[in-house]
Image (cartoon, rainbow, N blue to C red; front, side):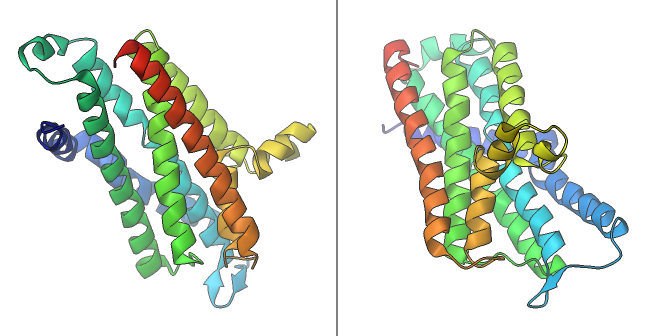
Length: 255
């Protein structure tokens, strides 16, 4: 593992100097949040205020924060496939480093970029938009666990997909599908189609649902730390499941 810091530095530098990717990771979320808040403000005549905070704005920002945190792992696929299985894999024959070190270093670098994204969203919306985040400890834990879950889900996709195109297609299906079911795009899908399972997915069945539920009960609009921690533990359990799956499959494939 002595080579790990060097490989990590390589990937982190690549990610932080990729201007297009960096804009999408750090700049686009802030722009989309501002646009969505402007649209929401135009659609209502009265703000929903509680304890001096705009609850409508806070709900929108919470949804977008955790959606972007869950999308973050998708960037991992764009690095792993070209480096380890496609265009640049020949380099590995000249460098005596285990492929798993490359994969873990890329994952850690991508996680840090995702965390910086979340931190930027939290700081800017707190200062400029007076967003209420509730319990700071629960917020920090949810951000970290959501980022971990996203990256291990996408590492799992890297291991099981035949190529980058297939992995990206599965990534889009999972991330956008779960975001839609969780209420990011159209609110509760159960309000559009009368199916009980859609209400269940919106309330409980996606990472976004559990993160929102935990935030709501950790001092946002509710006050039940037991429910907040329960949702956090559900996300942790899902993360642990994908860690085990990637360890098992990675050990078999040695990737």
